Image 1 (tube, rainbow, N blue to C red):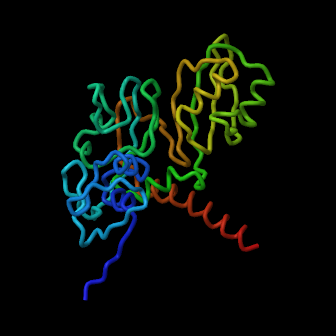
Image 2: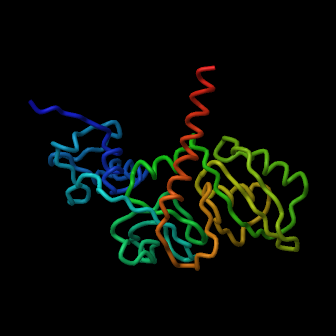
Image 3: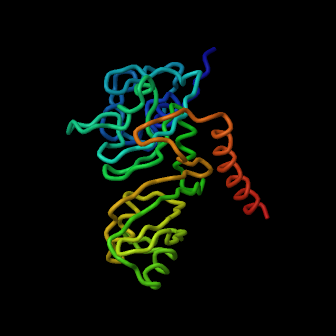
Length: 255
């Protein structure tokens, strides 16, 4: 007797290496996903990856790959964090050489931002990195067009209101003084264009923005526009980061 094991469609797509769960949800809402020939647009929809025929943009979704890939890229300015762009702009995947069709970006950096960007075909890994409760810190170097006061800095560290909700507390320190100073900013959340919007709320424009760390992973001396595979030790360190957070949360709930 066949046993049907159904899972949420966005989870199936992410585990198959199609896209992150967040991007998979966008694909579903856009009507680009078919299950057994029928368009599915509801995010709660489920399917059996072993028995159902699932297609995205007409292409059959295969089972999760046996070999997972994990890469980091030093993203340059002037390219978009997508696998394709309707406006014809350069995309980050074009910089990945032979891996370009095998992985997708984990999160994003906007068109004018640069720095550390991760790629994988491991949907669960991508989900955990992006999950808010994983609380994985991301560190940036930021150049702005003016000198904030101590009160500005206090507000930025404590949290500013964006879209009606205060941002989580951030670490912020000046690393280079001048008329256009540089700051190092560390966040534990990742709202859209968050750093640019935070400084804008205090009256400052961000002139340059570069991400240099995600959790224990550092960009280090990787040249701009170049990529490399993560080592097994690097992947393990990042996994331990969210496992530690999950274990701590479970302990707090049980105490």
